[in-house]
Length: 472
Ligand code: SAH
Ligand code: SF4
Ligand code: F3S
Image (tube, rainbow, N blue to C red; front, top):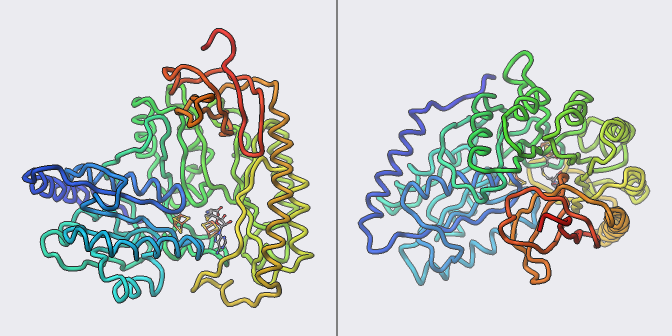
């Protein structure tokens, strides 16, 4: 099915509503404040930059205080039960802030609002929530908020569907140095454990010219580190026709003039191609980092997860990648305790991480998501056994990360100085090209520049360094 692209008139209309609300807000003695609270992945962070962009056009200032806020927007994540429980706990607690400040408007959006049953739950049990909308309705946030402001009734827009593409939504970016650029939305992979395809709709690609324009604007504004986002960036362009795919897009992005780094996430191993690796090896602007989630090292479990690759295929990808980029930093996601996974099968995951030696892992205990096929599968392990396996994985990976980091000591890396540190002895933070965190000390004026940093120490999670002579 062809991707539905909203017209510029659709977004212009929303911006007109922003202007009307801004007029109302300007009449107030002090500018009203908004708090946008974001859970989940970078896609949600990117969406929150759009929500803030709209709010800024409506005349809102920003606060991190729930008590102070006139509008609270909670951008939720549905990927695991734990994330949801945190959101619901925090939403529940807002009853008290709203009791103190009855004019406060509370909005819930993001992936949880696309889940079956969730909106009914909010309607019935969280009566202080004024507005709910799902990711597909984000583009019309101004219209929805205006309805709440003018009618003071509750508004729900959670119709779901395949999703559309909206260009031209204003952005209030969180960082001047680092920028997210979505290249596609949605997911068609339907991994059997995952809720994302149900709440984010079908895969749809932004047009290359829109992506490139955004990259050019970011670079012109001083951005040094650009992350291209999609649930599976390797599917980019499938809906756009001949010749347009992710390696092609990467080359176009790198052709934008300027000194900046490009990274991307996430890549699905079934679609990661040798062409992609060749482009990564050839283009100096592409960070030597790949996040390539393998989820599990056992082929039976991988098939039950509907991942459509084997452990051997994954290892072959890593071999091909390292052949081309020997210093590639590899990170990955792993799920422990998928229903039916035995401890013997889990040990294949341990073997895989020992074989690959990832720089870092994001490890998760399987969380059943209602409506996904895996949620109906029976378990063979108890929660305690799953927890014990999880701990074995974490311990094994920590030992690997520790050793890899120790190997950095004495070497020099070109790093982006990206912020002020929290420790007075290390008043700056930096990132290696591949994204490893380095603590160091130096003049604040270096923030936003690339510098050569010699690594002088390491822990499991971070590196310590000093500016090379002549640069401090
Ligand atoms: N699109 C990305 C991942 C999005 S979700 C990809 O395919 O790589 C981020 C991670 O959350 C996944 O890689 C997976 O490891 C984990 N995850 C997803 N659903 C989960 C579930 N039901 N329980 C536990 N972890 C889950
Ligand atoms: Fe979920 Fe799989 Fe899609 Fe990633 S690729 S978002 S894990 S369904
Ligand atoms: Fe969560 Fe939605 Fe991202 S479920 S991980 S916020 S796509």
